[in-house]
Length: 495
Image 1 (cartoon, helix red, strand yellow):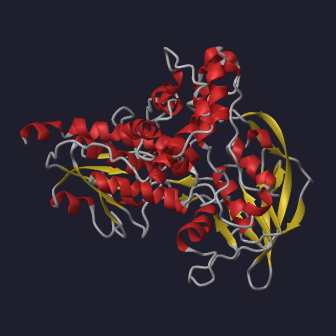
Image 2 (tube, rainbow, N blue to C red; image 1 turned 120 degrees about the vertical axis):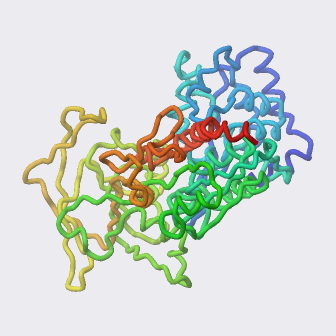
Image 3 (cartoon, rainbow, N blue to C red; image 1 turned 90 degrees about the horizontal axis):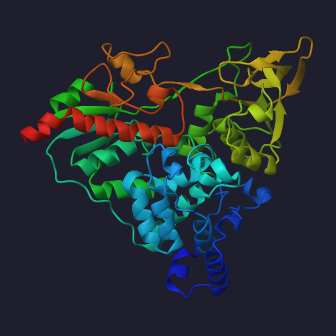
């Protein structure tokens, strides 16, 4: 993306413009092949934190935008949890009006540069694209174009600040600065509320900072988007643990009239198998937080993480991919994914699996750990794996893994990262016994308004879903902002 500002200021390349005009004239948009995202060399990038996907050059972005058919019924929008006007922003790119494309994105999306990188568009907007549904061709690369427009604006020096409503004089608190909280705060400030976001950690961004490595989502990208929210008027307070440092009642006394809880699912799950308490066996949460947020990879910091030469990551989701690829970058000679189902059943994005394979990550599918062994110092030295086979589909729709008796064998390891899911952060529910929660510890809400059993408390994201994508959390945040606006409507009228 380094060349974007220069591109915008200099004469356009003529070759691709001729190609574009020809495609328009012949009305053969559907014959234009979908663009590919340039990527860093896998055998270089697996040794550093360089971002893997490099972003589209401007000429390719315009050609890709020209593929959009501007459907009368744009089903792509129905596939977007935050309701981006996808054809509108894409048509601005086609007309080379990149700054207005970014403005359209920010009408409904607080974090377009983030979503353009980590949102699973292939399962959402792109899956609903006319190309996918009717033509059975590659869909328009909506995610690539979203990233392009957002990055272009960031590099242009002409960042737009969305308009906000007239101040209503009503205070709303947002608990958690992850994607759900940021989306909620972004909409609330547009309504005109006095919004303060409370973050327990020393950095803003929640899971965007502690859970996603820089090779997928650079911290600088998150910082720019949050800085733009500050310019809109959103206030942020770090190092404040709601339920400990301050209570909800404390905030009520300070004049807050409504609350959004977006505290996430930070409680790691384990498998409860023998030896799991040995040293150098981490949860993925701890492992990634230390590296991503606490500079554990830097020997000058006091927050080291042991990451050896023989690293096994248990799990098959995006967090498992992030963990194993991080281990490779920290110097592991052998970095392994251990997953009890086949590769086809893995919940990780296809792109993440592809990148991991390119980076020499070893996949041991249809295997599951049953025990760990350690040395006299209590450090893990090996794991016992059992081979699995697939049976009938279970409740998730995936074929159920069945252990194969007598198939156990040992594999040498010096570090293990367990990535088998997370549970909701229990702090807020435990501090509010009147708050209704599910058997899994998630806050129960009205799915239309995201209002909880406590009338002035709304919630969304992983604290409600128990673990989901960034964009689904953002959709919850937007829905909650609308619910809060409706809830405090009588106060607005009184003012």
